[in-house]
Image (cartoon, rainbow over all chains, first blue to last red; front, side, top):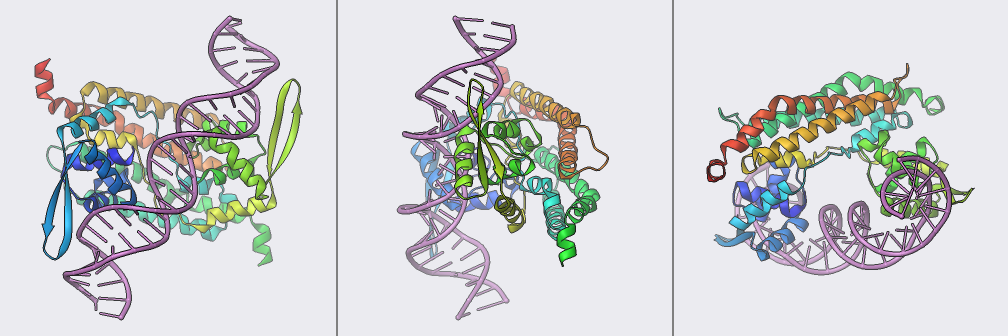
Length: 183
Length: 183
DNA sequence: GTCCGCATGTAAGTAGTTACATGATTCA
DNA sequence: TGAATCATGTAACTACTTACATGCGGAC
């Protein structure tokens, strides 16, 4: 999804400033599939405004620069559903730097492999905890179900890493006899 | 990973032409985390050649245009390991269009949701089957372990979709009483 | 006789990242 | 006094995608 659509997605849930949209990309439930810095968010909001998909409300603040609170319009909502319905997302490339790296485990040092795997394990644990923090309502909505999806996938990745950690390290150790002997 | 590094990754496993690299991105074990069309592969190979990270062997062919078979050099191998060791991949954004779409299940039609979920289920099944086709050696290498990782993750995503398919469809149906009534 | 696979490339365009620029407030 | 948070933006750059250009061979 492009940055305009993801901004529209955040605004469909609640009105927000560019700054808040960025926080949503970093922390909230959007952090699992959206990203983007100020350099892409602000131009995107300006374009959405020009296209009439959002409106901009200027809010003066005490001893702070003005906020620009963006609200989604009816046309914006329609544009979002159209963007979502227009294509069936056929696949998700992992495009995972971790898998790419582990693919070449034989060519790396055991040290580096263990650092990488351990930090990823910690990251998965933190992510799962973060999603679980939000209490589940009796009647879950799309966001809740997507959160459960995330937990299921993160958990299986986490378990795999925990159980295969040593195997990857052994691979790295086995293929570097020269380096090990030299030191 | 950028296109130059992924090309280098393919060439680290075996020498190949630009055309074959693209096939590797589409079919082989690289298809899980690498992608790129001719428009990015050929310029990347030229740059790698200019930088001395690969060499280019011209192979004449019977009644066909010349092939350019690229081989990785020692410097290329070093550049690859350096690229892999230089940063610890801290996270993997799903950047998943599917999750983004399901997040807004309430705003979509039950029909669209079911099409999307069913096609994704079929895709996961095909992917898992494709990875399992390669027979496992007694002594698995990085590529084999990464394949198992992929299967574990795909399988948990698949199971989640199968078991929550109806819940997503119900969400879409529940929030569109006006549309349903109007028709 | 038309489409698919093999084979390589360029040019124009899109999208997004990174770095820069500004400035007040609050907390340690 | 220095860093972090709030707050918005621009300019330059990087990287990749899409469309175009060319052409033979083989299968249906």
